[in-house]
Length: 327
Image 1 (cartoon, helix red, strand yellow):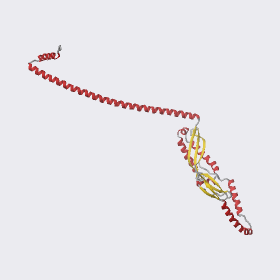
Image 2 (image 1 turned 90 degrees about the vertical axis):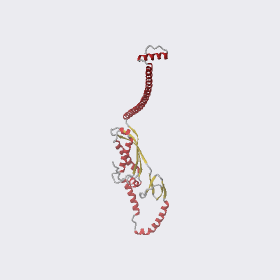
Image 3 (image 1 turned 180 degrees about the vertical axis):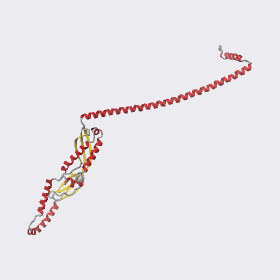
Image 4 (image 1 turned 45 degrees about the horizontal axis):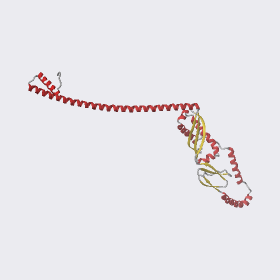
């Protein structure tokens, strides 16, 4: 889609031509040579006086920081150059046409259809600025004034945005509004920057905002239910992850405790084994020494094995003072 600039209004052009022709005829009338000769000196003096008077009648005007100013002469229809902030000296017959220099905005509420044929209502705000070099040749000469330009420019904004709506589903509007707003902005810049003629656009698009989306009630209810379900699922997933994390933590702690207990049991078993081995060695040593002593006693007393046993039994009875029933 391209911007197509309208043709100049025939009525405005005829009026301008009529004014210019009127002044031309007054200046280029055909008086007789005799009259011109007599009146030449008079008009020379009168012209000088008139010049002094016109200089005295010039007016100084201040151009604000946030505006452009362009003078237009009400007698000739001629347009001057565009001025920015500062003081401007206006000639007799000049009036000021001002344009906002800072960012302007256009706000509207649009209804469009999504790709899945659902109605979407949105508040649109477009921020734009006038391009200084194109105010005079395009906005004034092509469109004659700002209001007439807006009657053409604003519908182009609406048409571009409505066309972009059809590229997305209603659910995409609900979930990814930023992406859609970026494409609306890109498409609008392309539309405004291009035209069917060679004339450039007098505006630059700075920003587009997409806000306050509204959908059919039934669709909104479905989206809310879907969002709540997803939120619950996510909550359960988060809880599951927490339980898994806790279980893994407990498992690691139990494994550590088991390893510690195993080490402690192994150490204790080694201690018991060492003690048993030490006790075993002492007992064996004791019995070996006793065996040597009994053998020496047997040889010294010249006893046989049974005699030695009777001797040991007698020694035990004397040392314990208890009756020994058997050995």
